[in-house]
Image (cartoon, rainbow, N blue to C red; front, side, top):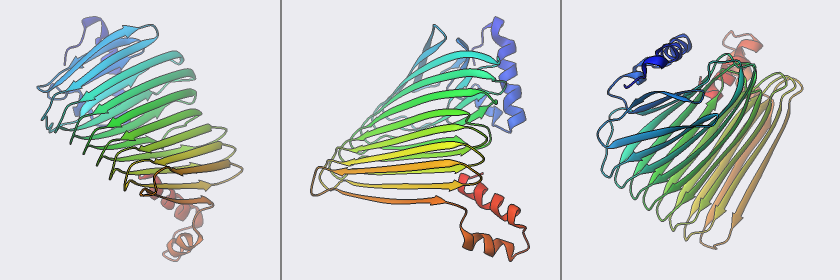
Length: 316
């Protein structure tokens, strides 16, 4: 890992947050392809054979290019760490990711804003996946109390390719979240977009997942899970478009409401090819009564049973 001397303290501070949060500090090792960002500065960068990461510092943020060659099979994930260690400010991060043909890679992305009180983070990620390649993108967040987050991910999956994208904000406050994930699929391509969010207090959450099944025999799934507490407001929109011959898409959204939370979910399925098929499954309301009764019969109090069910839904 190449680290500039004047940025060692920031680098060490981020590692310290990782340790406190129980995150994997081995992601900072020299065998991992990585870019480490703090505010508007690149504080660490490492490449491995088959992966080229370059970055430039822009006004209030960083723009990075990630290029994966053809036929690359990485044993370790590519680490994208975006940090902000001050309490106030604005950060913009742009990632342009290109994956060659017949490659298989995993990205582990962490957004680390532990001390934020009045902070805005804006992220744009574009991913282009080559023929027959597989990409797994895991996006996890550590937030302070005052984060406004605007995130958009655009993915194009080439012929026979596969993309799995997961966004998780379950252990810290969302405060204000605007999340959008869009995937376009070529012939035989597969994509799954998953979001899991916990909203508390007066958090405001908007999630939009969109799937364009453009190619023949393309398959896709959209999955969203939100647990809304207190006076939080949540709006979830899932859109799927069946355009290619024998394309199949499924939308699944589950929202649980506790307290005075206001939750809305809007499914939009549109078929423009009589050979395409789209399905939808949704639930919104309180915790499943049957599950509560079953757990309480095993000796758990109602609140303990409810907490266990919520953790299961959020994958904690």
